[in-house]
Picture 1 (cartoon, rainbow, N blue to C red):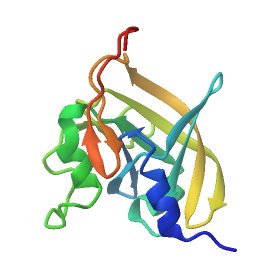
Picture 2: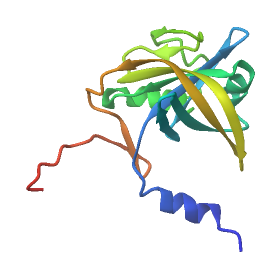
Picture 3: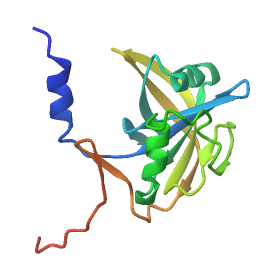
Picture 4: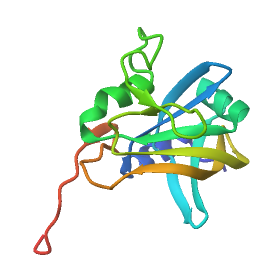
Length: 166
């Protein structure tokens, strides 16, 4: 018996996640997309994993360049998340109104995010309609301070700190 994808999609709405933008450049073409499928998997060596849908331009650029940038967005950057999620189809160059920087690989990183990582792909795995990218973090910036953008049940949220008395 195969699980209905809508049943899984509905169940996954209970999972809250931070919001990142994954960006890549290859032969002067740059693109990016909003991604919440991101995990730190090792501190030594420094490694993360992301999952990208195989039919996207970002996936193609990451596969071709074997590198990507990842920016963790702040709660004030919902419009950037929407932009890179394709919710502004009239925008043809997603980078046009953004300040970006590069570190080692040349992948664009969004200035003003809570943190950013410049990564080199070391292994890939096909995973259904996605590719899982295991990547070495070559450079990272950020302190963990600031208010992260959170996505839960198809809406953006902010964190609130719970004290011990609840």
